[in-house]
Image 1 (tube, rainbow, N blue to C red):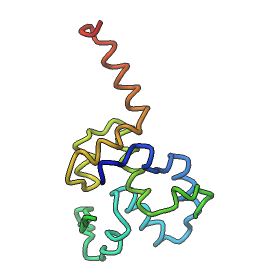
Image 2: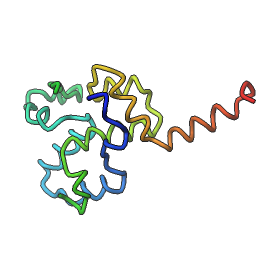
Image 3: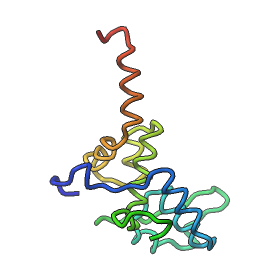
Image 4: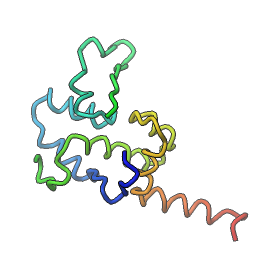
Length: 139
């Protein structure tokens, strides 16, 4: 991600927008693809590389081949597949996932790219502020 990008340029779906999106996807195949893309933070090109043999049903594991480089009334700025990657990163951080975990989960080589998502999650920032400011070591 170029250094000139700012947090304002990253578009992600809110929880209600994501629920609405999944409600209007009626074909099981399409729903499964979107859910896998969202849950694993996949790029569209990575979804295209998935094969049945990548799924290990016994271990419930999916091998992801990482690469570098509207529905439901969703705003035009959020109508691209990569928004799912931004969404899962933001949602994971919102519920308190560790930044390094999110970096690994969505396949970022550099933590610098993942930190951008942390700037978008006010719920996590507010919870962290409540935690640190109630410490007896902070005046």
